[in-house]
Length: 246
Image 1 (tube, rainbow, N blue to C red):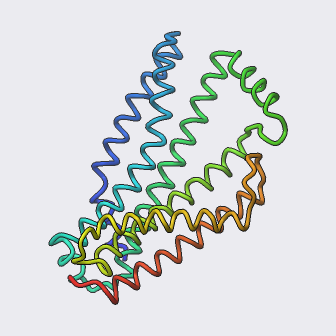
Image 2 (image 1 turned 90 degrees about the vertical axis):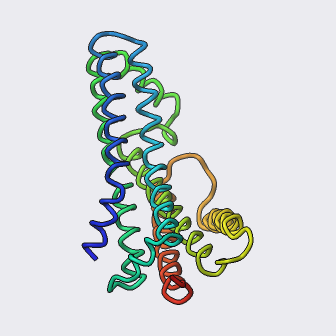
């Protein structure tokens, strides 16, 4: 399985390299703004870094779904499934590569954000006072600290990984149960949306919709989406093993 994971990483390294270069450019703009007292560069750098942080995690997930669809619908599928590996290993390698990439990129951006905020606080003393003032306004239930930020980030990452697993599931349904049917791509997308809504409604059974931070609620979310990811992975691999024709 290690070779399969390496193979999946090789397919996505160029895309990740582009993200790294773009992030470095935006970080340079931010640092120029900070150390040369250029407020325009600072504002642009902060805005673009925020955008690339969100977009990178999104793009990596979408790219994983795209490569699975390409592997199932082109000649690549014949090469992939000719290897002495079952569907659980093949799909598992794709999921491990994508999930680990999402986690690593998320951790890197969180670390970068902490470093940049520290630079701002050290360079502009009023920024630290501003953060304290905002937290005071938000109150005990809504203020942001490192622990809450880490917990919310972890829940968001696990949530997105489960969404990627659902995307895998929809793509595999398109290539198996809906193969050859008219509008199979549109139908699989509708299935994706319908399951997403159902999963969201089901989560509402276990937790309330309050906006205030609650450790128990966040832990339930993480466990819930982790279990959903495992179920979708098993169902997808089973479909590939029993219904896929290549």
